[in-house]
Image (cartoon, rainbow, N blue to C red; front, side):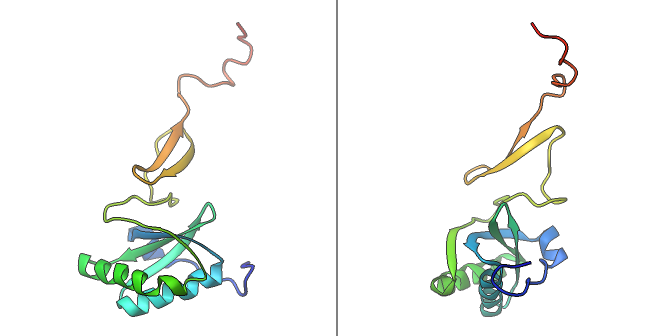
Length: 138
């Protein structure tokens, strides 16, 4: 349930699965929803968003010309966002983790976003399982 009104609809499944990240935001669900809809309308493009770790990730699905229009719309409407535009993401950015979309290495125990490298995972060494060694104190 959203804290600032009715819960917005979930991210369009096709955009979630195939879209490319264009921006990261801080904002309440309804404020982000209103702003993303205004960006999509102004750009005449397929744009939606979802939360990852409390950060709204804005996704775009379309060609490079459409993406250019989205970035122009973000610039034009940035002051109307009731929140904070953390950063716009360049073409090819992996963005934040998306369950079922972001490739995740075997043994991943945590992930974090590094602005220059995308999502980075901490991986437990498969050879070294603490449960297997609990009786082997040295």
